[in-house]
Length: 123
Image (cartoon, rainbow, N blue to C red):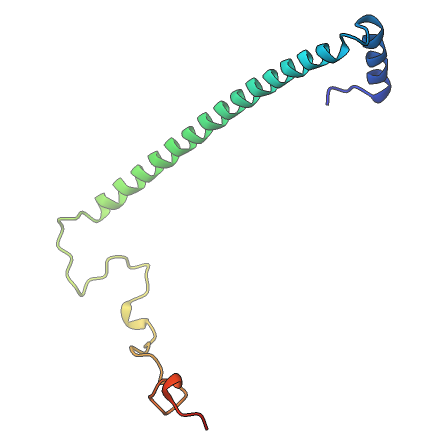
């Protein structure tokens, strides 16, 4: 993580054992662990704050783009304008008559008997 190799870590552990002593070493390690935990918490809080600011900036940019596009569309097609039924709004879209004829009803069941299967007599 910090470029500490196992031999370097072993040397630091032996030095801590010699200088701090085996009696206070567990308490010292707990204190160091708390400090590291606090530092990690602060770093996590800082990182989440930065990410939140970035998301908010992206949302503001998207809202600005959406407002500009909405204003352009509303200027092109004002809501109080008269649009005759026969006139196409957007010539880039295919005309309605070019759409394939779709069935308006569901296809008939493959079985000619209209009674539900659960009400039929078993053969």
